[in-house]
Length: 346
Image 1 (spheres, rainbow, N blue to C red):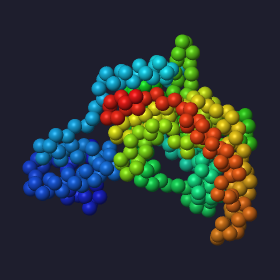
Image 2 (cartoon, rainbow, N blue to C red; image 1 turned 120 degrees about the vertical axis):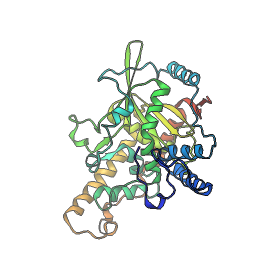
Image 3 (cartoon, one colour; image 1 turned 60 degrees about the vertical axis):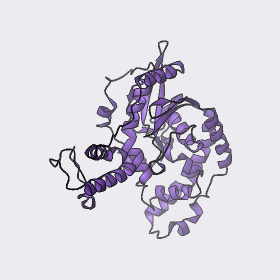
Image 4 (spheres, rainbow, N blue to C red; image 1 turned 90 degrees about the horizontal axis):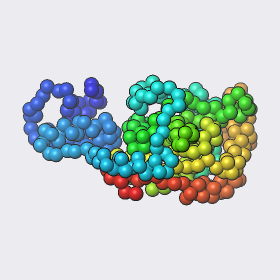
């Protein structure tokens, strides 16, 4: 593993392949440990090996928590009883999650740019105070696409590990999908809706294959997160949107953290979609499309002033109704397991 750290850390970094086996002083080792520990809190996976090396130099025990095989077996048994395990892939040969993701990354910005995607449905409705107008500015081209923050970088950095852990705990094979356009080829007028699932899962029970969606979240909270005990209601528009767009009846919602993970089964709710879709149509057709047309054809310096007639309110008029529906779905979602440090809690 050849990694290059910024120069500010070059004096404290200890490479696994370094030939230097005798440190100059204990204080130098302590400084290296401090920096490695800081990096571990920010970039858990990247600094894990370095921290372990520093502990070995100081003769301090350092053990990554490992799951008891009996716990994994018990979790698979629980999931099986709830019709999640015993899955098999109906298409393509199976390979590890790591092997698949080497050739599959979510580099679909050109497809997302001119579409409203499931991950933004809650913003389009108005679940967050400024989210709706910020999304409007982005979609008309007046602001850059969201590039990410510490939380999203953490989520992306740990996604592969989370997928592998899900596979280990459930036995479900994961298929890596492409970007999905809503009812592509059937209703061209709705090709502005899209989604990028984290995975697709086929579960076979009694000879019948059931196709579901996998959505993975790796909450950050400054690296101190614990797995969620229930589905956050703010995620429900995305989850229901994913199922509608890919035409699946259920979704596995997997929450991964370095301390443990939890898995929830969420079912497709057509009534919720019927309540939510008009708000999405309103946002896109009434606010985004006409404003984008003007913005692209004229020199608009201040879109929030010049395009005020197209600018949406902070929330859609049915926002509270949709929120209540999201809370209902969150409360009714089935938690399949909750594990901390490899130990099954429930």
